Image (cartoon, rainbow, N blue to C red; front, side, top):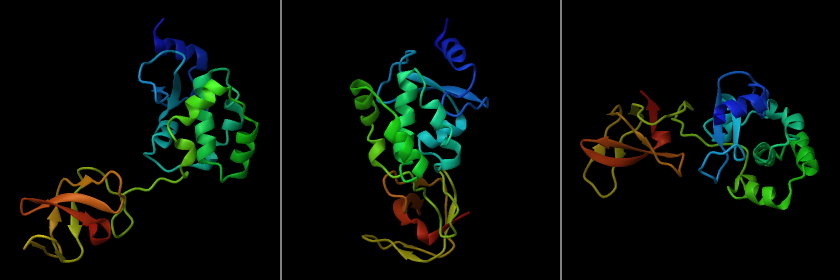
Length: 192
């Protein structure tokens, strides 16, 4: 029996965290990288996007953890603990976190990613109008900018194609202007 078939049988073909039957996929619980039935769970795309911080946490979506956190499978318990920790500012999540018991080995596994120390909100790159930016987008400058260390001046209205998001700073993107790669603050551009 394949791993996916095992997960379908184990989960009754539903997301192991929210019970959704929408598009399901195998998720390997970090920091492990080899997939075995003990370290993977079956997830819907909504859960996956929020776990991997591609979308903001929706506290209402996660209230079902009050039931699913009692799964007999350690991988499900670990991810439930991590999500409850990220939502700890919510009263219901904090209460559930207090009563969810993980043995020492699984608690150590749950803490390895450091998710429990992070805020529940995720910061995304947004332009001057609050529109979310993605890798490869085209943007337009809303202000004339002098490029430090260069004689280059990027004029108001300059189009910058195929931008790259600066990974650790949601206020900066990288783009090429006149063949030169520069860092631009997101408050000085709008999505084109």
